[in-house]
Image (cartoon, rainbow, N blue to C red):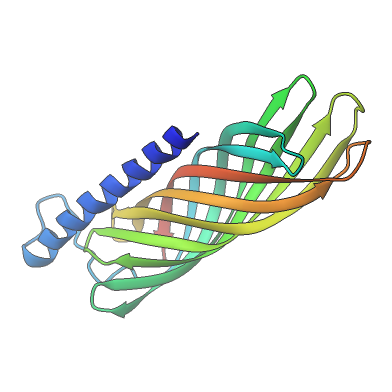
Length: 213
C-alpha cells in the first residue's frame, strides 16, 4: 500500500513539476505550434467528469485491517479566479460512484460513493495549471457479515489532500490529472453481534475532462 501511494504521488508530482517548467517557457516565449495559449483564461465556472482507481485500507477499532481497492467515476462542479499574477484559486465539489472495498470468507466492506468539497491553489502557466487541493471528504459505505447474514450502511466524514495538473486542450476544454489521499473517518456499524467503529483511508488517482463556461 505504501509503495502504491508513493508511486501515485511521485507520478503526479513529476507531471506537475514538468508542467510548471513548460509553463514558465510559455510565459516568456511565444507558444509553440499546436499549444493553446490560455494564460489568464482559467477564471470562471466549469463542469467536469472523471474516472480513476483507488486503493487503501479498511480499519476496525478492535484492530482488524484489510487492504481495499476498486474504481470510481463521477462528476465535478467548480470555479476558478485569479488572485494575483500567476496565482489561481478555486473551489470544487464532486461526487462519484465507487466500488473500492475488500471481501474475504467472513464478509466484505465497500465504499459505495465518495464526495468532496475542496479548495484549490494553482500556478497559471498558460496552457498548464499545476495545483494543490484540500478540503472535506465524505463517503457512503456498506459492511456485510457472512456469518450473521446482516449488512449495515453508514456515512463517513473526513478530510482529503492532493495535487494535480490541468492541461488546456482547447479554449474551453481541459484535461485534469489528480492524486488525492483521503481519510474518511470512523463510523459505527452493527452486523448482528455488537457495535463497532470502522473507517476507510484511500489513495486515488483520477483523470477528468473539465468544460469551462
